[in-house]
Image 1: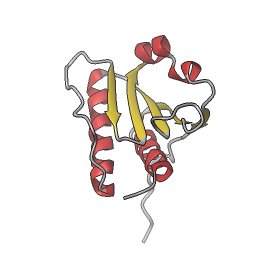
Image 2: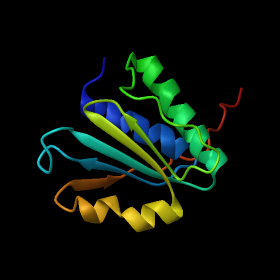
Image 3: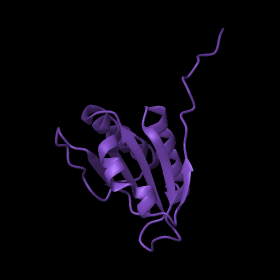
Length: 125
C-alpha cells in the first residue's frame, strides 16, 4: 500500500492523463487533522465525471487501496467524492468547482498543479 503522498499524486496523474481538468493536489496536513491530501479535478460532463471516478477506482485497486465510501452514480451528478482516508478525491463539474471553490476554502493548504504528461508515443522499431 502506498503512502498518502504517493497515492494522491498517482491519482492526480491518472486524472490528468484522462483529461481531468485543472488537476490540483492540496496538502491538507497543516490545514486539517483528518486527512493528508485532497485531489481535485474538473470534468467536462457527467459521463466524463463517472469515467474519471472509474479510473480512480482502477488506480486504487492496482495499489491495493479500497475506498471508504461507494460514490453515488446519478446521471446528473456534478460532484463525486471518493474517500480513501488519508486522501480525499473531489471530481467536480466546472460549475460545482467554481461554486464551492475548495482551493479558496482551504487556502492554507499548499496546492500543486498536476499536468497531463501528453499523449503516449509508441517507440519506433
